[in-house]
Image (cartoon, rainbow, N blue to C red; front, side):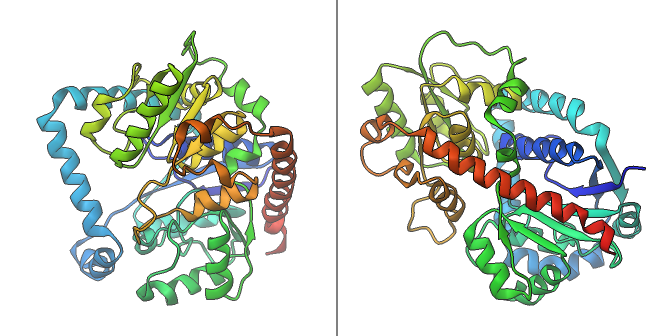
Length: 392
């Protein structure tokens, strides 16, 4: 009988981040390839007013007000701009169709925290990862940190990220508690390893994002059925941040190269400047289309971690921007810095001259060697961590 693995993975419906879907897909594939049954553990929260009063102050101190503000801003914008709302619906429909096919068959829903805790005993092992699953705002759910998992069930993290460079003071004690309960910890960035090694009694391993565990050939096969075909050189632009200066750099690159721009507009929120960019701005793009659009691009401009990952996997000429200006204390630059440093590609961070910087050749034979080494080491970590179910 196959052992059953439960995964606390970012795989929401109505959520249009391509990186989240692709890392969830890669995790599912790799765990299944190792011979395990896999389920996405889906937690449907059922909180009463006393629960909210208990966790409310912590949520507000951990970015809750900004998230609430952003949510209501989005609702208002969609009402004021029905055309934007309609186009966003096309994106959501495309992504939901992908998830319905590839993820929903593996969803296992638990209603309320008691059901979630009891449900943890359905698994031989529970894993969390990847992506920014340990961001401060998610701390109070006691879901992403696997606090809900029964003591007798092994718990591992694979390529988990805190999304911040340091843990808020009011969460240090709780962070140490949940880290010490984990049987194996793989993190995505060196800064995350530093946090784990400093705050807890554990030592973390830096491992590859799940998307890197699949080869270029495997991803091309995955994207083969995409119907997007652009028969001329183009610049693919995937920006999650709001910086206007980045968008001006993309326009500069267009003018210098003469290539048209394929731009995924308004990814995280409505940005007026996005309407001025893009000769081709499709919305009905699913994760397969996303991979194909990168694989065929002449150049890629991105401020996204996974946009950078797939530029490397597809061996493209690319530039990675910081999503917020480096002086911003709330930045999440460490993940981009760590990724580029691993592959010796620090010069792909934008400096001053986008055309000269993005035009530089990349020796992908050197990158491929580092990629294979990281993939092999990370896959071995995942394989050995999943075997921990035999030790409890």
